[in-house]
Length: 251
Image (cartoon, rainbow, N blue to C red; front, side):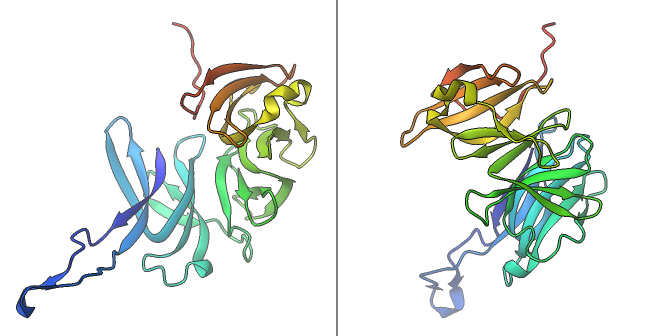
């Protein structure tokens, strides 16, 4: 698991001066730094990488050897906006490098990162415009291409589709920006709830698990959509969100 962690550096927050009759600062200012935290389920330990002002979205590459994440500013948060970068962490060496040549302001608000199966491209949400934009980043050249309006992209296992949210609709689109369609148009009764992240693909790429929340309410549900037929079924109601889909052999 990879996640941005915010750490307090002065945990003993109340500062006292014993030479001044025990004077203490009545309004101490906490000092923080952000790191990329990587948790090993096997070892039950965290490792920390970097020293930043903020760490945003993070995602493992398909081969598990790299993590891409967004970071802002230095540890002192002196100039957040001038130092936004999309970074790649190589787990074997611990080396971190920025994705090259993204251009001015092109990743200012990119979140919800999702890798292509071949490990060359990233899909992300850019929230700078309207309902947001779905962008595809070439990690080799640094070229950023906007392919749709929406948010929360999720790349299919075969690499032929990117699923994403557009208001109450779950959409899919080819990575080149063609063929966009709603997956729930045939059964619109399932569109009375809004979509929440993540959108989860089946290992075969033929179905989607959708986490939904009631419009102007607090109830949630998880549904499965068959992309070939458009038919949906409800898996659970008022339970936990689904975060992934693991193949099961039945043995």
